Amino acid sequence: MSDVYLLDALRTPRGRARPNGGLAQVSPLHLITQLLDGLKDRSADLPQSVEDLIVGSAGQVGEQGGDLARTAALLAGWNTSGMTLNRFCASGVDAIATAAARISFGTANLQVAGGVESVSRVPMYSDEAPIWRDPEVVERTGAVQMGVAADLIATLEGFEREELDAYALRSQQRAAQAWEQGRFAASVLPVRLDGDVVLAHDEAIRPQTTAESLAAMAPAFASFGERGQDDLVRRHHPEVGEIRHLHTVGNSPAIVDGAGLVVLGDELAAQRTGFRPRARILTAATASVDPVIMLTAGQAAVEKALRTAGLCPGDIDVYEIAEAFAATCVKFQRDLDLADGQINPNGGTIAMGHAFGGTGAILLASCLDELERTRARYGAVAVSGAAGTGSALIIERMP
Image 1 (cartoon, rainbow, N blue to C red):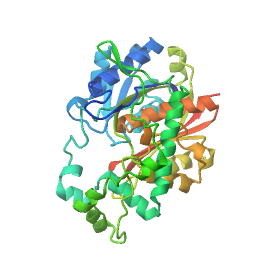
Image 2: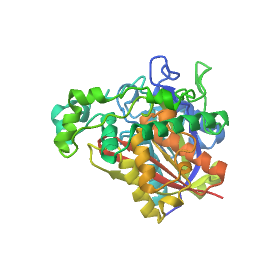
Image 3: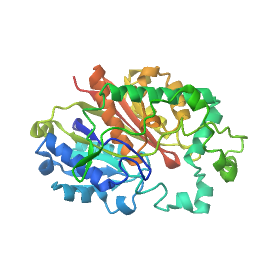
Image 4: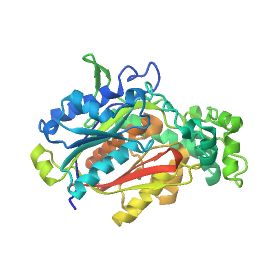
């Protein structure tokens, strides 16, 4: 088994997923192609040496259909194959884990992997999948709306609105500070269209957020509950009773467009491309949980990965977890008995946005940068997805 090294990481800024968002006029194909061009600028050897490009995406239809990875490789002039995979929001993490496994097994030396999502151009549920649209499938699986699942977690765990808002405020404050201090500069590639920069920063951050402004927001998912989602939950979990709808747009993840890619290789690949190995991938894990509660699978994957790596939760210096609603983050911190500074020290997806399949690589880039900035040792990345899926990676910074 070969060691697998993270050689480089590059991501786009995240644009609000709306018609006037910063990346709304940029196709997902263009986002990946620009990242490939950016990586080529860092090592001219990559286009000829990379053996596969693996891209995760949750909405594989329309502009994100047709094996987007291979199409991007062709347009960027890379001499590599391409594969696109889907594990809902955890797709980007799994793309990276798949590439790492191939290198570890010795069937490849150099791979590029990550993910992309343009929710502006390929909206949620565009694929018309049975788990969203078929009433019988929805009923049998208990596939509730994600915000309702988050409210269910808050109800089951006994969280209060103030706890959720406090976490959201922390995410906003940390993200604003991180951008002010240039902590993302090394890994963010400004996006261009027709030669002009259209977005150079994560635009969903709301630095003016206060505890008072968060407290004034109305619950965002109560209407879904009234239209039958709460009853669907209770048919699967009769013990629940009344669901307390505590999540608002302020303590829920912003939905954004974005993409990220990482370069992975063995020691020989690092020498050939001129990259200094930045970190080593220790292990990866996937997990599944109750599809009704659904949003705790990322935590389960982290716990599984920690056991495989022989580490304790406190050994990890930096956790970059997708903030799939504040309740999951509060639960994660409490269950693993973590200090505030260990989790998303530069803010998270509540502030900067969740790009579905693109989020895994974006979080990994942030984790890698933070480990290097603080000269810490271990990092973990985790994302929960729909239907009770979740994936995680654990990395070790190279000294």
